Amino acid sequence: MAEETVLVTGGGGYIGSHCCKALRRAGYLPVAFDNFATGWREAVLFGPLEEGDLSDRARLDEVFARWKPVAVMHFAALSQVGESIKDPGRYWRGNVGATLTLIEAAIAAGCLDFVFSSTCATYGEQDGVMLDEDTAQAPINAYGASKRAIEDMLRDFSISAGLRHTIFRYFNVAGADPDGEIGECHVPETHLIPLVLDAISGRRDAITIFGTDYKTPDGTCIRDYVHVCDLVDAHLSGLDWLRQGNSNRVFCLGTGRGFSVREVIEVAARVTGQPVPVLEGARREGDATQLVCGSTRARTELGWDPQRSTLDEMISDAWRWHQRGAYKT
Image (cartoon, rainbow, N blue to C red; front, side, top):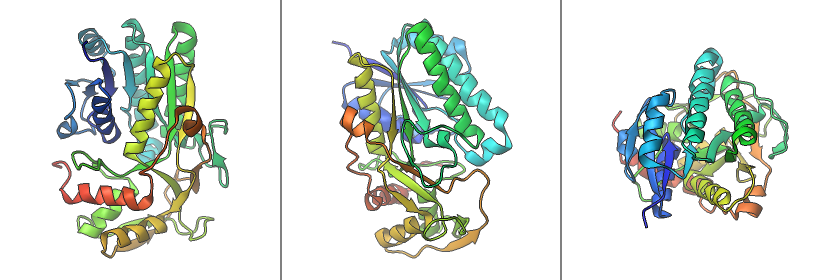
């Protein structure tokens, strides 16, 4: 029996590449679709590559016709908060407009199972709130707003065309493939843990803490971190959820515990056994004080068990990948 195919947009990216590996292990054929604006060819290791842009409907139609995927797992997106504030139009075109083209191409091809990578940034600034699927969404930047708009779009196409979907709103993704084959590498890098590891290894002079006067125990922002492998496990469970005939569903993915910037730095120093050079800077526009998951829905309904999502393990896996030299930049 031929392998069933799943189209993975952003399959050369951080999360998409890890998902391709997990899909392959689960018996699917992952087809990575990427324009390599931010992804890496070296990360496409687990199935075929189709290079293209999501705004190109003819290219998408060609790919859907060639591979006849049973589902789409949609990771491709612009995701820099600061950039989205300065250039919101790029995010509305690149995230919302491109996803509309993808959805319409999938529906035209009869591919009606759709797993969407959303974000806790749709909630905006909600200090002291343990966020769950029913928390009001109030994004404070174009990145979060664009993801919320896509969620709304999926619901509209569910009504009009029977598009089945699972939506994952997740928190800060960290770590790397424990086998060391793939990992996290962005240009420019904006995520805390790889930036800290860059400072430790001398690839940058220091890690800058942006804001030390937040209303938190140590004055720095607090985030909920999830290991990338745990995250993609949830996405595969979300795909199974749809294929078993269940209804559309939203899931938050987080551990329920937040760590401050200073705590991450302290653990990184302990795990690597090396000091972390630190600078203190002003707050960045658009940064929320605290984003922590208060939901257990994924655990109870999908049986999700994020076993690797300890700060020590996430930093250890990321450090192992980091020492390999990551991708060619």
